[in-house]
Amino acid sequence: MTHNLNSRKLFVTLLLVVFTIISSQAKKYNLKLNLKKGETYQQVSKANSNILQEFGGQKINMKMNITGVTSYKVLAVNSNEYDIEARMTQMDFVMEVANRKMAFSSTKADSSDVFSSILKMMTNKPFNIKMTKYGKVTKITNLSELWDGVIDQFPQLNAMQKIQMKEQINNAYGDKAFRGNIELATAIYPNHKVRKEDKWTIDTKLQAGLSADIQTEYQLSEINSKQAVIVGKGKVSTSVNSSSIEKNGMKMQFDLSGATDAKIKIDRKSGWIIEATTTQDIKGEAKVESTPQLPNGMSIPMEFKTTSTITNK
Image 1 (cartoon, rainbow, N blue to C red):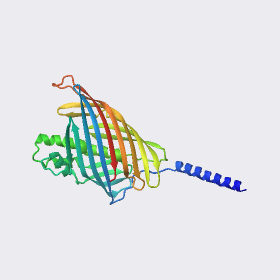
Image 2 (cartoon, one colour):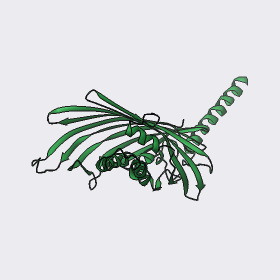
Image 3 (tube, one colour):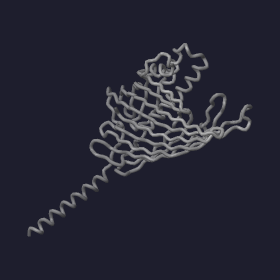
Image 4 (cartoon, rainbow, N blue to C red):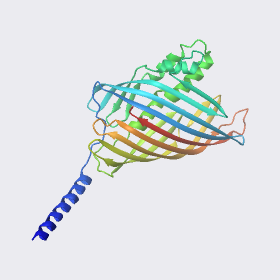
């Protein structure tokens, strides 16, 4: 009798375990941003890039480290999107090429360092963003004009230097570049409920210097009451109709492609990223169009390897 009772208890326990597993797998989750009016959310981003170029038979290796701290204050919560006041509170840029290292920082107090002084003046300047609850940026207001106004305040720069500086800053931090960089971190949510292990696809466009399309397949890997883990695998390719830029009087057409991998941990309550790691491996070439000085044009093989991290503090 005791043996039969124990067997029944074991059977019931097993049924409960199986039922719990099935229920957990069958449950659907609504993953999206759930930000609160008046709250400020922070992102600390770090990108370490290794860029290899072959120019005239010589290989040139460039390393770049870019760090940025940005705060996002929610001004209004609408039915489909948020009105956000954003501020960059810290900006650091380090580049190393041919055994020469250059470091610039918004925290550096050196008036003779023009670029660091510009970064310092760029910090804590508010600009506005409209973002959907699925992380897509629909509008950025006057960010490029803000940067242009900062650069115009430096009389030690001549007109040509100001033009070049504005181009460099806007390529890295302008409206289009900033939108793409934000969406890489925030435009990760499906526009429908998903179960654990479900997959969905998000398209993102980068426009920092040159244009590239990223198509990422995301998957809900883990989830509990406090956080969820999303993993992603993506394909990167330069945009066919807008991958050319003009630099120093030369037009360059980029033919690049590669892959990305991401692991993102989000807070279940707010949907905000707790931490994320993304790697990019991109290869291809830049084709310089013919000029009177370069009648046959030129092809420059290129390779980019980047590791990016994002945390909320």
